[in-house]
Image (cartoon, rainbow, N blue to C red):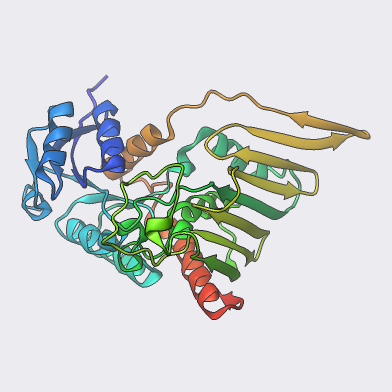
Length: 355
């Protein structure tokens, strides 16, 4: 058997998610990490040392000049997704850009257009599409095992865990929003994916920015991307709720980085005529159904691999072969359109059409 050629890869951004990408490329039989980039040189050097990467740079434009680098992960704050991804595509690189696609659908469409123009793969980091349990539920829905799925309900709440208060996560011009664009994107994308991408019609949403406004008074249980920066701002929502109408099932959601309830939860419920499924986010799922007058509660036990490793392997294989990625930009634009409609609805305080 011929030895698999490893695609030379680079990572731009060596924060928490950048380190996850580095671990994934290092473990993949399809990729070889040869360059890491971060404005903070010590971060790039730490990742390079961990994985014996030959190049640690502070300017991604220098990396783009290397013709041997074929694939790039963009692991940067949201406002940099569009310009940096487009620059990488223009330089002839395949791109895996972290979620969300960008700040808005206009930027997302510019990225999509660049991928088509330069004939390169642009995949988005909607990693739940690579979770074995998520794909099992998608198959059940496709095969009508639940009957007609008419409604989906999801919750993604925590007690008090606004990330990096005063940093880019809580700065609207850099993040595009708060908990909805950070956590909500994962849940909405997972649902649309499992439902085989029904056309979104309208969104009625509400957003609340209450607990983080007075940053010095904000008490918290956890703060990833911290510590707080009191010289910064917090002008994004920490709590959301709403309803998404589609040409298929409706989707109700409630989410919060922070709220004054000491318990949080993260789950998705798919309600069908024949049965229902409750998925614990990132974990197992339960099927509820009936037969011959009896009620059944089934807890499948699947062999579940790393969704992150599957994501990186898929990206590299699709880039090498030209196959369409399950996370291709064309299939993620719809999620961004829903996010845009949510923020417009919250601003106008009424239901709005998804455009």
